[in-house]
Image (cartoon, rainbow, N blue to C red; front, side, top):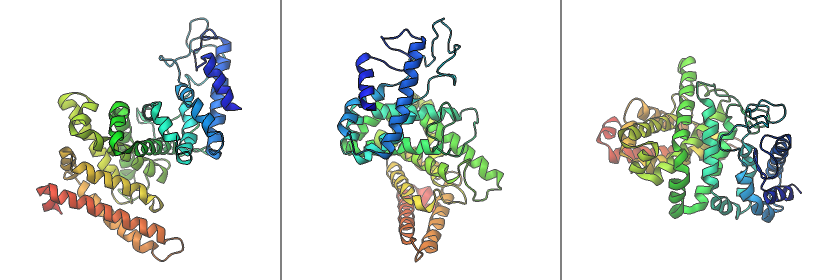
Length: 379
């Protein structure tokens, strides 16, 4: 089976781009790379449809799967000493992110197998997944436009701009692992593994929010949908905010600032991340997510209320600009959704979800009233 193939590769010490068996840059090494990447694609596809069989074997080979990464320099070396200039794999200008192929299947496995989250956590999967997410978000640098999901869900593309489905899957897996760790242990994982990638993740969030705002302004401030992929990016954005708020709630103001750098500089970068988070949670003129995805939004709002109680800079951000007015507007939008779907076929669930969102917004506003005299005047 494919799991036995990976077990044999582990025994031989074969990894992408380097192994003790083949000379680095040789055709044999490139052929081995092709096999590993192709096998990872196959395994990732299989895991998405079948997670109940061979669970023990999958957990047994998990450490090796998580180790499948390119060499430290990230660039293939040819046998002539050049870099990526010979024929053969890789052809796209570098090594692929094998984690892209495995992550959807690992997410399915984490929900189907009660032992899988613990196994992932024990092998530093939180760091690996957040690192992969931060690297993929880096593909948006330079104003690369947001794209719609591909027919494959936007997960299996090599060296392409990140897709909203890919972001959502990575965030769901991170959140699943944090919940599995529990309230006592999750802060340790966040501090030791997730915080190292927090700056890149929040920079990606800021770029997504910038493009969403530009898209809205281009439509004259109308409701619209953000970027290419519309509702998909709206959901992915809220998922990113949820990951950030989980981290912020666990770290506290001082450690959060240090995650961005020492002193005032780190605090300013953290403030920019707060602004992006609040902008994503309270967009102008449209629901933050599709009504069917209200549970995602409700979770993020609950974390926002928690962070308000412990992060004074967030209170300042919330009471500046139009953020508070936009959040109150969200309250009105979701109250309308409650009425719109109530009594319709299959609409009661959506209506109940919208009630949950409206209640969560009320909780955020109430926390602001209790903590900020300026908020009391504005509300």
